[in-house]
Amino acid sequence: MEEKGLQRLDPEIHRAIQAETDRERQTLVMIASENYAGRAVIEAQANLMTNKYAEGYPGARYYGGCEFVDEVERLAVDRAMRLFGAKYANVQPHSGSQANMAVYLAFLKPGDLIMGMDLSHGGHLTHGSPVSFSGMIFRSISYGLDPKSQRIDYDRLRDLARKHKPKMIIAGASAYPRIIDFRRFGEITRENGAYLMADIAHIAGLVAAGLHPSPIGEADFITSTTHKTLRGPRGGLILSRKKYGRELDKGVFPGIQGGPLMHIIAAKAVAFGEALRPEFSDYQKQVLSNAQALADELISFGFDLVSGGTDNHLILIDLKRKRITGKDAESSLGKVGIIVNKNAIPFDKKGPRITSGLRLGTPALTTRGMKEREMRIIAGLINDVLENRNSDKVLRNTRKSVSDLCRGFPIYQYLDEES
Ligand code: DSN
Image (cartoon, rainbow, N blue to C red; front, side):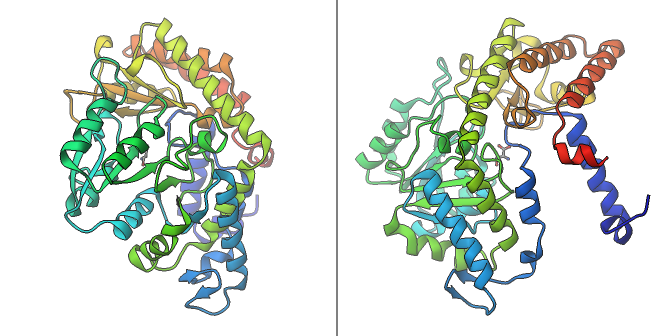
C-alpha cells in the first residue's frame, strides 16, 4: 500500500498513533475520565486553525485575520451557554486544571483559604492539594466523606466552613460515585460569605443531559473538562454568572494563558452541538444504566463498592477484602485488555502508587454501544481475572473474550471500514 501523509513524513510518530488506535480498538477502556470523541470532533480539531494566533476574545483580538476563528469561538460560547443554561461561558482554558487556575487567579489572592474535597476521598489535585499550585499558592483545608456512609459529610463541611471561613468552597470530585448536592453546597457557601466553585469535569455530560442536578444557580463558578462524559476534545471550560465575566475573561487571558487553541475550540463547538441533540441524552442514560448493571454484578461477585454502589458513571471498588492492591489489580486486568486505574479509597492506608481501590467507568464502553448485557459479562471477566490472576489459562481465555467483545463493538465504524 502506498504510504501517504504522516506515514511517509514521520513514520515513527505515525506508527505510535497507529499503535494507540489499535490499543483503543482492542481493549476495554474503563477509565472513568476517558471516552471516545466522535468523528466530527476529531476532524474539527485536526485543522488549520491550529496555525492561528487569536489572543483576546471574539471582536477584540490582538491579531489580524481572526474573522473565522471569531465565528468558531462565538458558536462554541453560545452552544456552551445553551447546553448548560449559563449566562457566561469561556471556552479558552486548555484543560480543567487551567480552568480552575483561572477562576482562582480572578477571585482569590495568594494566601486566601480554599476548601475542597480531600484528594484521598475522591477530590482533585487542583482543589487544594499541597503538591499542586492550588495548595502551594493558597492555604487549603479539606472536607471529606463520612466513614460510615462513604458519602460527603455535609454536616462536617458546614462546621468546617463556619470555623475556618474559607474564601472559596470547591464542590466536585474525580472519584466520587454519588450525586453531589450542589444546593447544600450553595447554602453552606452563602451562609459563610464564600464563593462556590463547582468542578463538574467528571459529570458534565450527565449535568448537560439533566441526569445529575446542575450547579447553575448555586455555584458562582462552574469549571469542567470537555473530554470526559461530555465526549468532546481534550480541553477546559468555565461557566458563570454574567457579572463575573470580565474578571474571568481576564483570568484566562492574559492571566494564565496566551493564545487560545482555536482548532480545539472548533472541536469544543462541535461537541457542544452534539450534546444539544436528543441522542446525547439517550447516551447519558445508557452510561448510567451501564454503571448500575456493572455495580450490581460486581456486588453479586462479592466486591465491596465504596458507598455501596453508584449514582453516576463511575464505580470505586474497595479491594481490601479481596486481598489485592489497586496496583496489582490494575496490572492484572491490563494484561487481558481491561484498562482501569488504581485509585485511593477513603481512609486508604496504602499510598497513591499502590492504593486499595480500583476506579471503573462506563462512558467509553457506552460510546462503543455496549449495554447492560455486556456490563454483566465484563463484571464476570473482572472477577475471573482478580480471583485467578496467577493462572495463565484464565488470563488467556479472558483476553480472548475481551477481543471478541471489542470486535463486536468497533470504536469507530469509519476506522474499521478503512482497515
Ligand atoms: N485525571 C482526571 C481523572 O482521571 O479523573 C482528573 O483530572
